[in-house]
Image: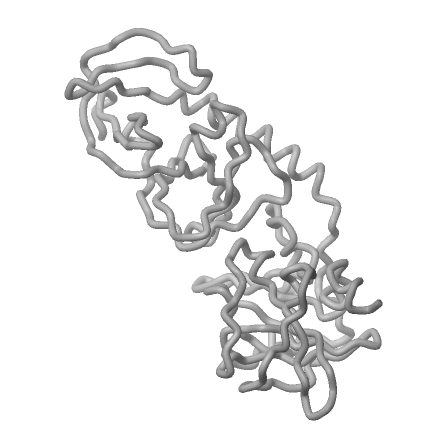
Length: 304
């Protein structure tokens, strides 16, 4: 049982903040934050935290009504649980667990319920209920704005055969029927003044393939294209693609009812290319759709 006076203190942009220690789930170094589909003040994106999509907020950006950038590098977050809600706050440094005993008064900041002094420094104690209500409102707006329908795999057989692979540290799969071959050791000829989705062209035995990179849709920097890179060759819609991946993992045979429409908001552009998600006790696998990759708006310039 935690002492209600005990708080966890952390630093963000030179300001000290505090939250009740009983609400703290974990302090973690987030390796990847997926971007939100809409630019919202203070709303950074989503963290895959213990098989749940956890909203990530940035307090200074919210207080100043600014849209924060998604961190390109790993960043430190403190994960809080308030009732049934779980969310994370971006922080610069975790300071300590301490009892706040010297109140200074109220604050004009909408998210701070009281000011304290600790070791000669002002500490802003957060009103977590205000945060929860605000996050719930933002998520509802995102749900209403999310127009992309993510279909369940609907093959006429009871099982779907997939090829598994990794990309930017995440697990993905594609229906094998969309796959022509896996290649490695090919040079990508760059294209200029095109979207980062289209990285260049690959000459596969005289056949010209558009090289596609999903890094931007995952909130990651563009991939470093080297000769050792692997590609999935996809064919369809009168076009051939070479999809950049980390590496092929294994083949999967999954009952169709295991591939489901996610019950949570999908993040940004990634949702445009998804057919569904496979949830296991060990991992989450994002199932891509070849047809949806081919229909990407970013390929318009290449088609022309």
